[in-house]
Amino acid sequence: MKARIKAETEQTEKLYGFDYRIYEKSVSTNDIDNILKSETNVKNRLDAWNASKEVGPGLKEGLLDLRELRNKTVQSLGYDDYFTYQASDYGMTRAEMMDLMQKINQELRPLYRELHTYARYELAKKYGVKEVPDYLPAHWVPNRWGQDWSAMVNVEGIDLDAALKPKGAEWLVQQGERFYTSLGFPSLPQTFYTKSSLYPLPANANYKKNNHASAWHMDLDKDVRSLMSVEPNSEWYETTHHELGHIYYYMTYTNPDVPVLLRGGANRAYHEAIGSLMGLAAMQKPFLVELNLIDKNAQTDEVQTLLKEALSYVTFIPFSAGVMSEWENDFYANKLPADQLNKRWWELTKKYQGIVPPTGRGEQYLDAATKTHINDDAAQYYDYALSYVILFQLHDHIAKNILKQDPHATNYYGKKEVGNFLRDIMYPGASADWRQMLKEKTGEELSARAMIAYFQPLMEYLKEQNKGRKYTI
Image (cartoon, rainbow, N blue to C red; front, side):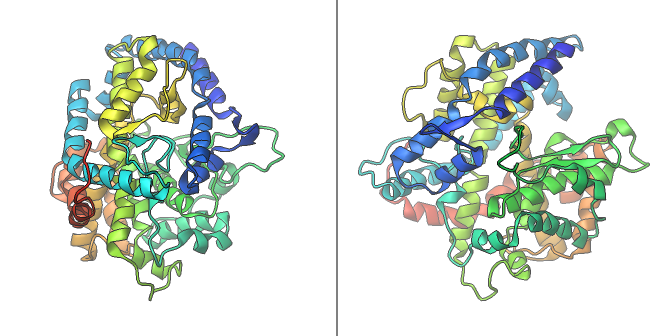
């Protein structure tokens, strides 16, 4: 265990201490992300994408070492491997978890297939490429791992980035807190602000910072903190609401009725679901109008809004339930050989996401390890896939049964009954059975039904757009 903690710390330091460079100039991951979101020159995109993968090779030895250590620490507890151990948090076997991931992927595949075809043609047009590729080149999509393509679409009448910029980063965090208190949750403890690290490091800082947003329950009591690099833009606006979801979940199950060891989510996916639910709610038009972030008379195209959401939520499923879950399952449980790590990564990326590398990626690379969770949050990425399914089930219930509003145009702000519904879910922490909780609160078992229903109006539009186009997945 000591060896594992030491190895994990070293791996994280390597990942976040890495000096990313484009044209010999040091850049941050925020800089790379901004290039991939906005650059139309394919060569510049490729250079930024390549730069984002340079961290991989240096992480290979450490990751192989961690596989041994992680497997060994749980084998002494009677588990076959680390993936099996992590899946057991859901009261499920490894095989059951992988079956569930397949099911979620299959349910959303028809919609993903339309989005994939749409993206290939639209991006080819955008980049001035005559021949539309059968598979999406990895550097074409606006995200380092192809997990979120929402930057492809700008919805007319909604320019959140422009509205948020003058407000400043501090406003985003404070507004996130105001959202929760409007639902009846308490204010954040003052120590949250004094002990968290919420904003990017100043240029003259003499240390590096983990740039992946996270929330922490330091003592399973009142000490809650977050690590973010908030900048005043729409992505950080949504992320802030998400991370505060974790914080409020911590604070809610920190109560005398929940024993210290059960101060966790009903399962790990619930934790992510609560955060993502608030991220979704905070991006809905009626709510943005109330905050004066968009003009109440702004004419917005509902289909474009839904398309932007689908390019965030739906495109994430093949990555989370497919690529990440299968690669880690192969890595920990099936002893994926050290000379096939990158090959397997790109096989899965092509199979599930329909994405291919821009050039050959041999075993001198380790592109999987450029994703933070592979190193320091291992064998649990299916949490996020499940969380999206749960989040749409919760949102569907809140919109239809509590607010009596269209799920595509809700405003949670100030609605204490929404806060009460969420508090009932959050209060018992891990002392509640997650399946029972879902059935009790929403009236249905775990199902992608609500997510598919939410995006159903988009299907007709995409089919129309894709008429005469070639489908390749």
